[in-house]
Structure formats: structure tokens, C-alpha cells
Length: 223
Image 1 (tube, helix red, strand yellow):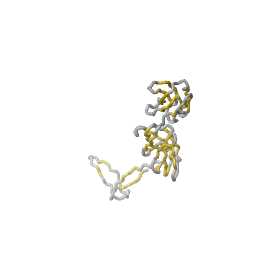
Image 2 (tube, helix red, strand yellow):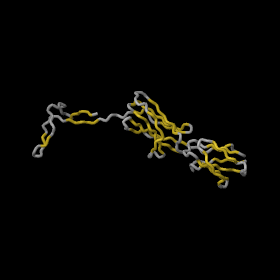
Image 3 (tube, helix red, strand yellow):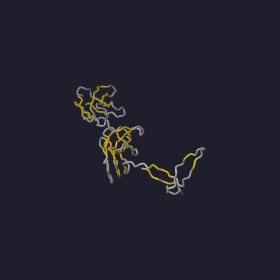
Image 4 (tube, rainbow, N blue to C red):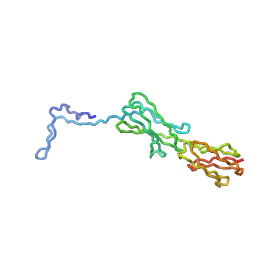
């Protein structure tokens, strides 16, 4: 809105206030006894955050939590994630309550967190399109390597991949104790596959996930 103000020490009576006009000789006349100033006051954003944003590992993902103390014509929240705290991407959207005068709690589960430190922030969007960001928080998440069992194994080896690997299909490779690649295959994250190793020589083998070279390999023994 617009707020009417007067200069300090001057009357707010506008009855004898005139507009400053240039004279024909180029000089200006200042016959008014009070000065009017207009101050633009922008409306506050639709949401007041209550407390800090939180992010912490929860099962196979990261739970991001936040709360609002009041909402006026709020539209929605966008949860953004970054690997370096500088470049963020949207990973989810949560509908806002819209209008409230009390505490409202929200959360979103990041089901595909990055291996290592994840940075999160909330983008609050109003119905009129304006938006603001929360402060940024971080959460460390470790993506576990594939699990091979039973160990030792003699005929069938079962392999389970963690569900938070981002690829639709993930390549697997098995190496012998000398680093020679024995086989390659693919498996969908979050599922269990089986490999027939009945004809393999007895010894120590290592199963590696090709999607992320930083993931440790799973060592197993063929009886």
C-alpha cells in the first residue's frame, strides 16, 4: 500500500500546499508550507516460517521437515536439493495449507538422496507468484553398496541393490581375486536378482556396482 508522510517538523495540513512550478526565467517557486512524501510499503509474503528447516536420514531416504507459523494465500512449497550448496534442483512439491493462523507442519521424503552430503532448501510460492527461500540445511547420507548373499555361496548368489540408486537399471560386474572381470549384468535398484555360480572355481570374488565408482565392492566367497 501507500502511506502518506510529511517531512519532519512540517505541518501535515495540505490546504496551502502547491505544486512546485518553474518560472519563465528558469527559477523555481516554493510557496508551499508543507512537504508531502509518499512511501511505498510492500505487503508481507504469504508465509511465516516457524523454526528451522530440518533434514535427516530416514530409512532409505532423507526426511525434510519444516513448519509455518502463519499463512495467507500461500500456494505451495518446492523442495530443492544440491550437491554443493550452490546449484539446486527441484525434487518435490508440497501443497500449502493456504490460510492459517497456527503452526502447520510439512515434510517430504527424498527417496533418491545423493551419496554423501545433500543440501536442502524450501521455496515458498504465493498464489500471486511471488516466492522466498528458507535457509539451507545439509544432511549426510550413505548409499550402501549391493548386498550379495548367502556368503559363502555354492550355487546361487542373490544380489540386492539399494533403492536410492538413481538409474532405472544399474550395471553390476564381478571380478575374481586377480581383478579379472568374470561377468556383467544389470539389475533394477530396490530389487533382488540371482546369479548362478555353480560352475565357478572356488575362491574370493568382488561384486561392484558400476553406477557409482565410489561405492565399495561386496566381497563374497564361492565354495
